[in-house]
Length: 188
Image (cartoon, rainbow, N blue to C red):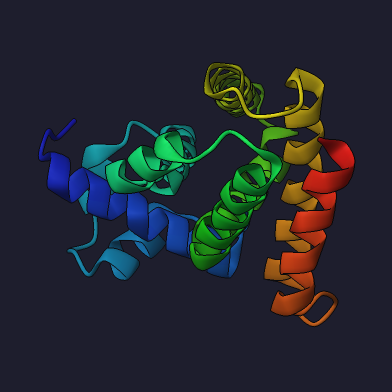
């Protein structure tokens, strides 16, 4: 397998775009090569098989969804109160919503994971680690609420994001903001 990390990342990013646009069935090495604008056969030189590509696409979505260092520093410096919590949740929903193709690709990967045990194991591990990291951050930060509140917000806001990305007219952006605020107030 090839080791050019920049090329590999570009191919995985192309796979995310293909997954979001065409679904898991449309994800082929050829479609990734086309999306990335590279010669046919390039993706097959970087990934052992389609499962490897699917798994790396899932990992890359999570990598790209991480907040930048400035956002993390600002969050850590804020007061540990309910309003700060609401701001964090609005920023999270906004960040995920702006990476529409990444989240749609992740939904495709989750559906595909129901048929691919290896992918399911990788995604389960990644999601569990993400939830655990959120709970740990929450507990360290002194924000109000407990681990159950973090998990409930995770579940509620994920579905709000699904609605926002798949049926955006159900909850316009202004209403989304109010719903995030209400979820924090009622759950926390």
